[in-house]
Amino acid sequence: MGRMLWAMMPIVTGVTCGAELSGDKAEHAEVSQVTPVMRTLRTSRQNCRDEEVIYVQPQPQRDMRSIAGTVLGAIVGALVGNQIGDGDGRQVATGVGAAVGAYLGNRIQEKEKRSDNVFVNTDRRCFTTIDLQEVLIGYDVQYSVKGKTQGLVRTSYDPGKRIPMRSGKVLLDGLTRKD
Image (cartoon, rainbow, N blue to C red):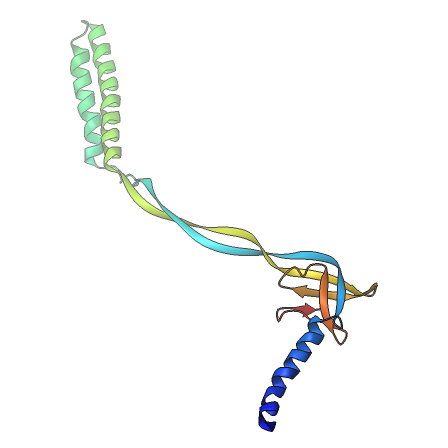
């Protein structure tokens, strides 16, 4: 029987302490202000997309093929111009035909060369985006005991209107910081 009482002693003691904490003898601090504490989180992420890009290769140095269009155009233009008019007018028409033909032949040749030097490629373009997010990290709680300002604590939750106390100290969760 003595051993049984001895074994029950911690249980009785625990109940007594619990009653003291939650009973009428427990003190309370009055909460005067609760301020949510926010923190801005910055996260970065990479965004990539494929884009079509037009590339033009630089023109090579002039070669005989680039002159061929000009010469051929001048010959054809001169032949056509020679068919127009007679006498001095024929000579003028031949010269004008050769000049116009040379110009047109050169332009056609350049256009052909440019189309050979242009190509389209798909390139991957990436850039970094920064996302900002406001998150609640706790509450700054200002409290007072019997009308006198006592202090400020940070809690992980909103404590409501009263904070329990024991031996003159506030009782809060393990995630508090007392200032």
